[in-house]
Image (cartoon, rainbow, N blue to C red):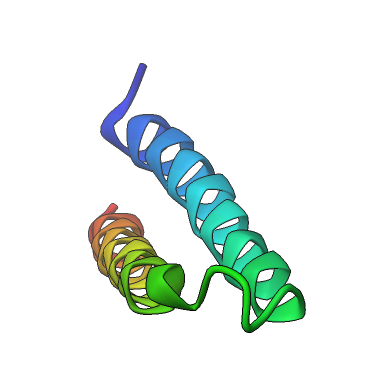
Length: 67
């Protein structure tokens, strides 16, 4: 598998992970005030997931531009 294909697969996995984290936060918000103690940890997971996704997308874009 080429580097571009490997990065595309990683982006796809990170995208799914970020979407799941976002949905977890959404679901948690619908149940408030139940679970309020989990809001910050879940929000941080969402932020971190999207940060990793954006970094990997930038890496992929740079690799594709160099090819």
